[in-house]
Amino acid sequence: MSVKPTSSQQGKTAVVTGGAGFVPSHLIERLLHDGLKVIALDNFVTGHPRNLAHLEGNENFRFIEHDVSLPFDVEGPVDYVFHMASPASPIDYVKIPIETLKAGSYASHNALDLALAKGATYLVASTSEVYGDPEIHPQPETYWGNVNSIGVRSCYDEAKRYAEAATMAYHRAHGLDTKIVRIFNTYGPRMRLDDGRVVPAFIGQALRGEPMTLFGDGSQTRSFCYVSDLVEGIWRLARSETHEPVNCGNPHEMTIRQFAEEIARHFGLELNVVEQPLPPDDPKVRKPDITRAKAVLDWQPVVPFDEGIAKTIEYFRGFVGSTSH
Ligand code: NAD
Ligand code: UDP
Image (cartoon, rainbow, N blue to C red; front, side, top):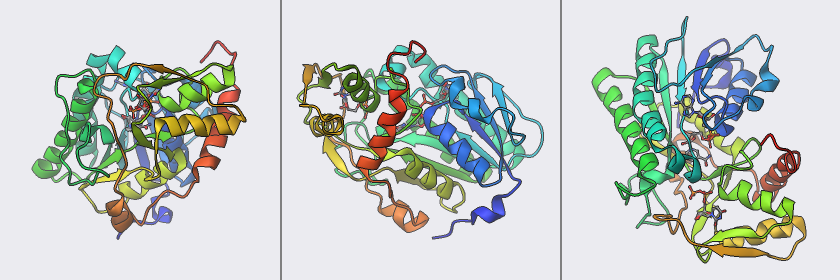
């Protein structure tokens, strides 16, 4: 295990694509907290300016509105490029499949070229979706996956698999210092209430007194990681010496029906669900094997599910009834 200490990061510069999104906005806060300067780029296709509004006036932070699938450059030295830009929710990427493919392909090349030109470390946000509907459970990084290359989710899954391939090609061909984080379902404040992912969907429905929309019979499983845990893992990975993909997620697995029960419990409600058809290619199980993250990053999630969900519910309370979300 070798991770550079945060004290040696003071004054360095990080570029974060997709900075106005849920996970990237938390990453930016962490980088600023550790003394870095941050330049964020976003075109607000799924993110929102409110996620960065509190950073206005911070002299170490700069925002550029830009579609990173189109070429871009930034002035001055850059130490890290975090390529985080991509639609991430199934309803978002099914609505904008071509933008999603470009975020994994064209935008990856643009971000990789920036890192190469600046001699920066490059980190890409990949996903557990590279494992598709997995036949191995839990999923270790050595598993090559089971992805339908022409299904409705393929615009996302294959774009991320391409993003990983491009990252390894730049590492091998140019010696670029690259990192690949495979993110498993992560939740927390700043998700969009209407982004369709199960955490905001069920919490929003509970807050509005509506039944929760359970897709299929709810026997499919997911493992939910609180965002501060993920950000810690990403930042450790960026400072590590590993070039192999690393899973970051919480191995605490539950069925989606159990997840609905947990949300009902938090609200002191009886379980109230309406079953809807399971979307095509919806993975039946998902749970990260985090052996590698423990070994190379000395990382594992620490935020208990109840604590993370309570904070997330608190955040969403402010939006129910509002028209701006
Ligand atoms: P998000 O939608 O909140 O954030 C993504 C951001 O990227 C948004 O602000 C969006 O506007 C921006 N973006 C997309 N395409 C862009 C483009 N062409 N140019 C500029 N900006 C663009 O989603 P998130 O959950 O925060 O996900 C962040 C990253 O992490 C994504 O790459 C996603 O694939 C990955 N990831 C997230 C999860 C999760 O559970 N949250 C799981 C796996 C992978
Ligand atoms: N899901 C659900 N109801 C919803 C939204 C999602 O039952 O309103 C299910 C979905 O079918 C999947 C799981 O919850 O099995 C997680 O979905 P999400 O969109 O959050 O992320 P995924 O892990 O599928 O990318």
